Length: 87
Image (cartoon, rainbow, N blue to C red; front, side, top):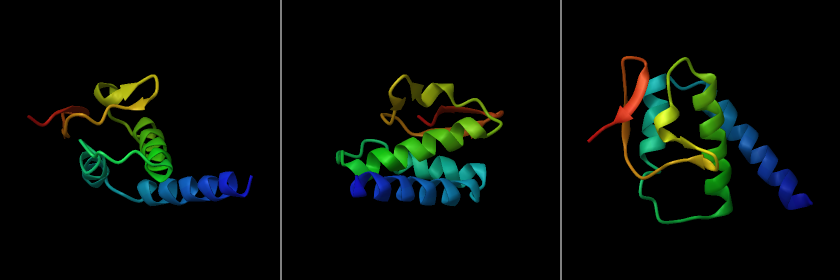
């Protein structure tokens, strides 16, 4: 129970942090997670907060969304108000 509270607090910290970032910096945060091999609980919380912030922005982020969270296989960039693959 205490762990859940700590994770919720950490998610709120991530969300507060993401809200202050301009779009290009938010995309950089995403790109740093691409092909990252670690899969720990804090990373899941981070990616969840990142997904929520993407959904709050005024650009199309559907290319990185799936029913479980974010697809972090390829880097993206913001082009014409939507995320596109960087490659």
